[in-house]
Length: 75
Image 1 (cartoon, one colour):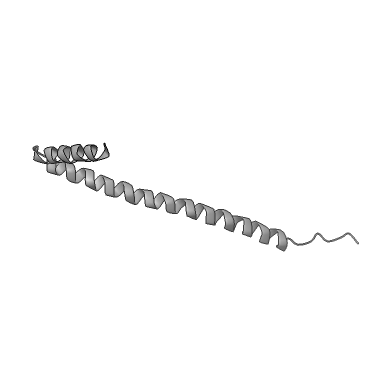
Image 2 (cartoon, rainbow, N blue to C red):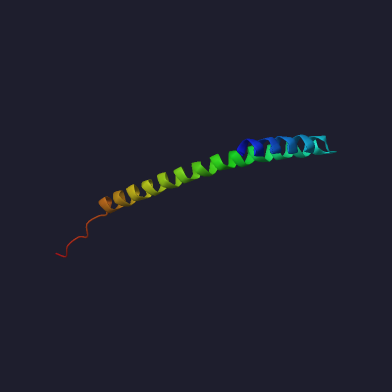
């Protein structure tokens, strides 16, 4: 069944290419696919960066707590 769908897809793409402006439309679709792939990679990179920032924020909070000056006692 998948092979039949693939054949149909190839036939459809070939027919599109034969239409006036079809080649231009197919190029635009391929360019769009490439841009979506690139965007997906960038978004996955953002998730990783968010995790790193969260870890650094926790570490910074711990350092700040450790550096707080002790309140002087009344003498």
